Length: 189
Length: 189
DNA sequence: CAGTTATTTCAGGAATTTCTGAAATAACAG
DNA sequence: CTGTTATTTCAGAAATTCCTGAAATAACTG
Image (cartoon, rainbow over all chains, first blue to last red; front, side):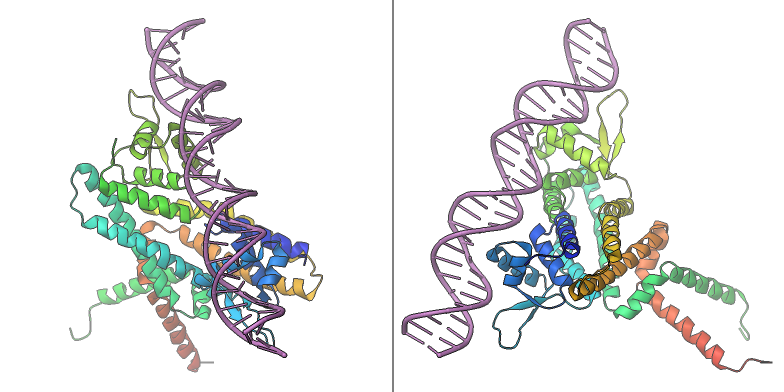
């Protein structure tokens, strides 16, 4: 099977991008292919379309499954495994972020917390701990924020993102209004 | 020069993390070291502390400089180059995100836009384009949102992040209030 | 059960990335 | 200009990551 040039360039680009983000190039290509495919694909399809060995495809799919990024399907009367990506692109992004949080961010926070418990033995160590504290607090703030957002349905999240900083200006306005109201003497007080 | 175990574990951890995010392990370690150091370091210091060859340090610093992640300093009466990371951790994160946006996100958006201009030659291609459109729109929305946020001063940004979804609930409340007001018949209408 | 098809595993070869030492360049001092 | 010190460059060695083919396993079928 030969990919059309249109699919080809998409697939190759995502292979490259993957490799810049710590994802194996061929796994990136496999995912790109599954993402744009208009039907579930089996390992043989992928192998043929991308020209990788069957075993490489098997390992790639295992990897993608471990990241919870693909869905296994079965076609009636066919015992091969077919795969798709989730329909919803937002779900894909959420899964990616969530997995990286679990695998990389949490261990990092935990390492930082451990080191911060050690009593510094020198000025150098004390300064290092101050820096690590700053890093810890920043990462924690961002992940807390993300987990808060994570709960929203896509619709609302999109709305909120489109508002951008506008929503904050409104918030400041509210604060000013209340401040003004509190300046006025209350009836009967 | 030998690193204290406290610094050692931080530096090694960040080397590992770097490599999972597409950053060379030794470059990650160099950055971690510069980040926690209580004074500017020169290439020789780094080389000695981490046990890398002088030339590897030179290339690593060049790389970090290309990412705009380090600052060059000079000490009076010393013609060697000394380096630090920016004081502000938020600035570091912003620079990282901004550089990746320029290097990876923008080319991806541009590739997607190009492909989306091609007239689909089959159902397969048409479906692929629909998926790419979804991806394009999502990435564009996230980067637009980020660039909006990017403009805020750190203080305000932190405040907004801490509010999380609360700010959105307030926004919805405002909408409901206005809706209620509009339901009431207007005087003289 | 034997035969067939689908999938996985994994040792080691291939490809890529990273790192080094030696040499080149640069920048200054006397 | 010569000598000294700092930095960069780069070819190839070293290390790591990736990929494959062969064999094993698994899951069905008649």
